[in-house]
Image 1: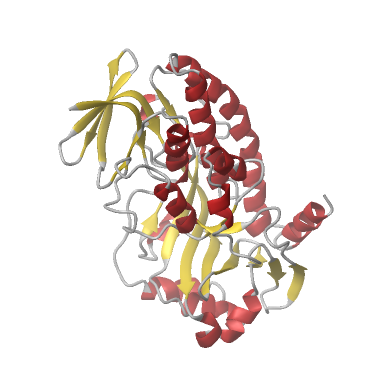
Image 2 (image 1 turned 120 degrees about the vertical axis):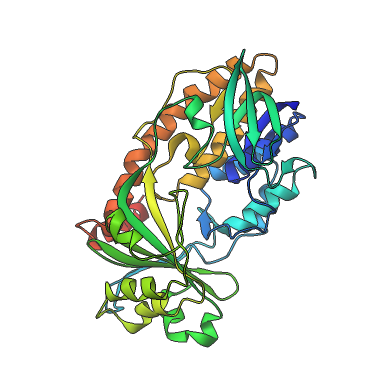
Length: 387
């Protein structure tokens, strides 16, 4: 057993930002991550990094220049299509001036590279967490080892093992699932689909279902097939899943065929985003914590990112996680001899900020596959363009 001053569970963007900003202030931290290595799994697709949150966090981390070097130019363009592939709205990119796009894995990479080599402990799967009193907590790992924290931060996502120390809330299924697929070498192997998607994001939507794809660097089309379906329906697909803590085995062929059948009659270039996938599709069931999730102050422990305020995807999740990490680190640096004061300052700002984004997240989800799709999203983009 050993004791660490700041113990962070989870090496996602929020946890790594927290560790990096603490390092900038000369405060040591240790990050425990269940993945065996940085390359143990894919890190998801592109993120648009917002000036008032993600970019602020990266500035606090001293990583603005490194961030600018990984921007995917032109990827902030967007187009909305009908199910026949007809163009309904085209929004050109602004060369990444406002909300530049980067790959999540690239962003995670610059954060990892900015930390001392021994900061992240890989292969450290948390088996349990318990309070020892006086603000101290014991974290036990699957290999039988333990660590005692002076300050414990749960940055471990939707199914946080740290959250139960603070809250009884558990994520609930929203009734929406995204099926993730990939096409590679698209300009050579799927040129018609590549042209239809364009240089950035593409949305082909109808009430209850849609296909959203994003052009990524290296000739990759990363797709989320969006469906409003029951958990039982999703389970019958037999696909690997994320977000419930478990998944299914199989090559995905049966599930892929069933998903494609939901889009019968759509343009073949759009269907190719499903049927042409070169990786097994993955079902990502969308869960949320209660709107405005918060907790009473508990000595020696707090949460950041999805562990604190999981909500439907709206483009804000990663940005808020990084801002949480940067602001918590800043509060700790400002009150190094009073951790409880630091945690209170952080939570007093984080709770109302995150609460304001829950409504936005539900609204975006409704615009994408709710009753008004695709016209609600067209109106939304139009209003945003007008300022």
